[in-house]
Amino acid sequence: MLRSRFAIIITAIVIVALAGGAIYLNANLHNTKETMAFIESRIGPTGFVDWDQTICVESIDDIGWFKKKDNWYIQFGKLRLEFSPRNLRDKDFLAQAQRIGIDVRGNLEEENLRFYWHDEEIQEWVAS
Image 1 (cartoon, rainbow, N blue to C red):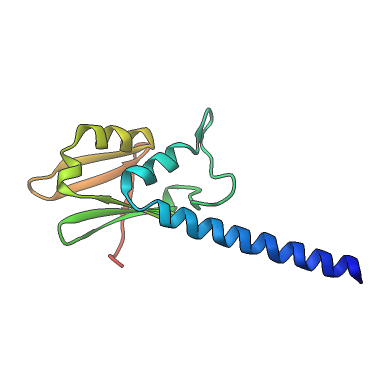
Image 2: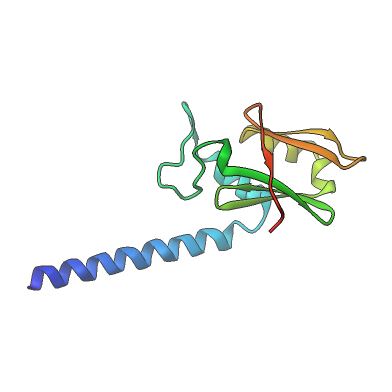
């Protein structure tokens, strides 16, 4: 009986710790550069590895983009990346996006952009 109570308490502590970690992670990934750096930390010698399902991207099907007002957004699993016109003119920003496999193609002035992840086109989603 004591063992089962102890196991239940330990399980509850682990669940609370994981939930707290997820909240902390989301609170601290409040800008796209930091979020891309986090994604980049998950790239290993064999490619992108989401070993603990923090991001929840297994394939291109888990990634989509949409435009809202003046900005474009890429939903990268659980994470959202914001691409403003200013960011899309910043070579360092675009280089960081390419390091995580995202390539932006098209004409920014005409607002005709397409997004690619490892040379596969990311599908446009309905804005949420």
